[in-house]
Image (cartoon, rainbow, N blue to C red; front, side):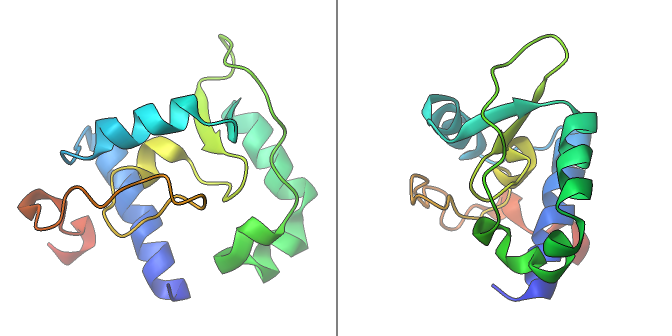
Length: 124
């Protein structure tokens, strides 16, 4: 996936998340992530702190964040409400809403082939 497509997909996922739009495959993907050993829960402050700590590495490897060290493994608490993947570093409720996005472990199926409701927000 090119850098521009990845950025477009990330923005699309966040917009869909913020507006509550889901595709038919989104709940299955989120359930899969909840069961995965590579999921972690972080607050926005903790995630931004990790990004800042890895600063230049994040900028140099934006399209290949999987190459950086894993996010820390943390359990869900009142202050940690955001679900992330430790491997790809993505905010999963956003990523799970975009058909073209993939699980780095190959755990998501392409159940939604031909789902008319999954066009990019940015294409409209």
